Length: 214
Image (cartoon, rainbow, N blue to C red; front, side, top):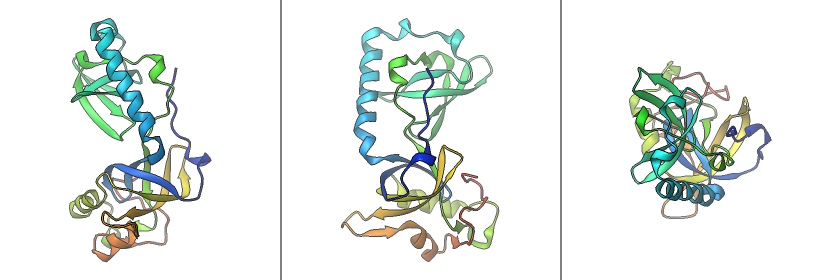
């Protein structure tokens, strides 16, 4: 059974309540729907209980750990869903945790085949890029300062996004208003980054700056 992505072409163009789970740059960040957080937490708690109850050795099969295989892997005290991206030699794998927009490197012996019951929920992280923003001077890469500041401003914050257009069917070009920590008033992340001199407004909806969604 394949795990589907959330199809951004089918999503509302209205305001969507999200939380930011990972940031690489203003034009590459990952969000989850806020209303789905409890469902994901319950699934991962169920996965953790299942792994403890069955015993890891019962479903571990390193001979099946190939690219595109769905796996369960432990991070700290929590088990996560992942998909194998590639093998590094005979002993190491690169795994994408697509519920969180993260990539990890682990020993092949840490991989466990993900049971079908945990494949029914879509991957929860949606890759996005902020619209009409580019690096100052329209450089081909985002400076470290801009990336670091964006991570600081966004770190696990919640807010409301609007999709301007989908990127294929898996990502989106968006605007994002953050809920301020001390009040209900919203603030535009795009305007804040421009005001702080870390980005400039562009006519293009999305620029090809690295790292970026395009």
